[in-house]
Length: 314
Ligand SMILES: [Zn+2]
Image 1: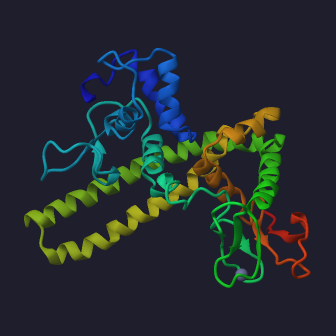
Image 2: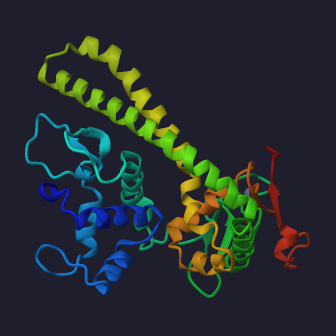
Image 3: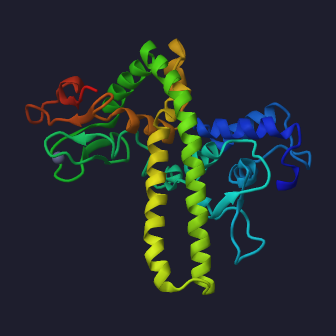
């Protein structure tokens, strides 16, 4: 894979792969689309979702290589923790690579089998009286419910709350001022992200070197104990900065679509929808989504009377 990095036909495809993964498109969907476009790998067969995944975690495409002095011949899937700048230039930016890596290795991505992340608002919406998250109870049909995780103060049908939230989200995504804001922040974000990604790669490499030096005895444990916590802290802070700076990127694929917004939302995978809901239902944007109990016991009130959003003006 690494050796044919700059094959002229390959670079645009690699770029496309990373951009679509960043937008929340699944490996399966990309593989199907490439097959339909007659795009084949070196063996002349269509790319499988597994093959695409191997490409997407290959740091060589971002001009990075693994710094792992103690182990040789290891596959580049250990994660970004040990990556350093390579001698070649990448096809995609480091920021994009790290963002996609985080996304495709996120454990929540694969939780649909155990049901943990299948629902739009679980652990995103909150109970209004007590502030605890809503979680799904009675996940089995006929009627799954969101309910206060801690005290059961309030519960509501999943479909009703999802529908309400979807209308609010799609309505916001369609706004013209949102498109303008996102366009402006996009340019600043790319610049900021590239800077953070560089610093992060540097700090991670330093940490890897330090740990290697400790392991081989080239550095005393005493010295290591003084230096390491500071470095770990720096990596953590930079990771948080990166997360903060990428916030609008989860929205980008859904903004500026006008009438097609709802359709695009319906086609968005649940993990990406949850990212959007998590990004928007915060005090600074749409407000925290909170559920009040039914005002009269055993009498179901309409959703709009039971949902409140805590908002701050910024
Ligand atoms: Zn509660």
